[in-house]
Length: 303
Ligand SMILES: NC(=O)c1ccc[n+]([C@@H]2O[C@H](COP(=O)([O-])OP(=O)(O)OC[C@H]3O[C@@H](n4cnc5c(N)ncnc54)[C@H](OP(=O)(O)O)[C@@H]3O)[C@@H](O)[C@H]2O)c1
Image (tube, rainbow, N blue to C red; front, side):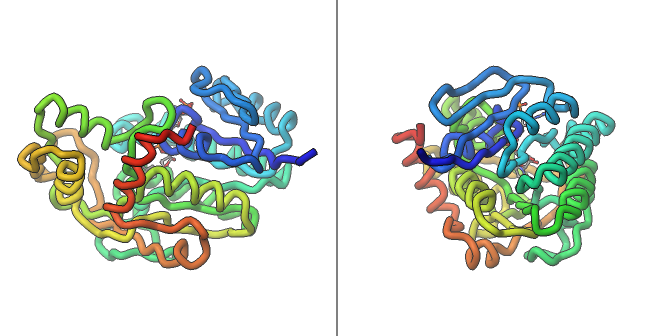
C-alpha cells in the first residue's frame, strides 16, 4: 500500500488554495482547512470546517493529522480592508501564522507560507529574494511580520512571495480580480484600472503547482513566484480584454491618487523569478502563456 504524504492547506475556500487542493496529486492526502463548508468531495481529500483562528482547534488537527507539510494561504488579503481593520488583520495575518509556525516547529511539518510582492516599497524594482522589504500599507506590514515569524523555522520553511495572481477560481469564488473583470466586461461595463502600478503577474495554476512542489521538496528560504512580464495593471487589463475577446475601450486608466479610501500601493513591485526558474520544475510563465493555461483549464477543469 502506498503511504501518502499528508498536507494541510489553510484558507481552503480561497483563490490560491483552490488551485492547490484541486491539483494535489496522488502522492498527497490533503486536509483542507476552512471556515466554510466543503467545496469538493473526493478520495484523498478531507475537509475540516472550523474557526481557523482557534489555536486549540488547529492543535487538535495537527495532533490528529500529523502533517508532513502545510501550505498556509489563509489571510485577510484585502489591502483596503486591512488598512481600516488593523486589529483583525493583524490577528489573522500575523497571529494565525505564528500559531502555525509553533505547530510546525513542534511537529516537524514543513511550512510553505504565502507572502506577497507588496512587502516591497515599489521604488527599487525588480526585487530579488534578498531585497529588503519596505511595506507602505498595513497589509504589507502584517505580511512582513508573518515572514519574520516563518523565517525562524529556518530550513523547515519556505516563504513564497506571490506576485499579482491572475486566474479564474478553480474551486469556490475566491479573490479573483480576473473573474470580476470578465463579469463586468460581459455586462458591457468598463473597468477602471490603476495605470501606474507595475507587477509581474503569475497565473493561479502555476502558483498552485509551484506551492505543491515547494511543499514536497527540500527547498527552503524565500522564493519569488512571478511571471516573466513586467507591466502596469492597465496594460495587463488591456491584454486580458483582448485575449478574452473584449474591446480594449472597456479598460479605463485610473489615476491612483483619485481613488478615495484606497490604501497606498507600491508603484512597481516587479519580482525577479530567476530562483524559481532555476530551482523549480514548475515553469514560470509569460502573461500570454498564463492566460492560455487559464483558458485551457477552464475548458478542461483540473477536477
Ligand atoms: N491573489 C493574489 O493576487 C495574491 C498576491 C500576493 C499574495 N497573495 C497571498 O496569497 C494568499 C492567498 O490569497 P488568495 O488570493 O487566495 O486570497 P483569498 O481568495 O481571499 O483567500 C484567503 C482565504 O483566507 C481565509 N481567510 C480570510 N479571512 C479570514 C479570517 N478573518 N480568518 C481566517 N481565515 C480567513 C479564507 O479561507 P476560508 O474561507 O476557507 O476560511 C479565505 O478564502 C494570501 O496569503 C495572500 O496574502 C495573494
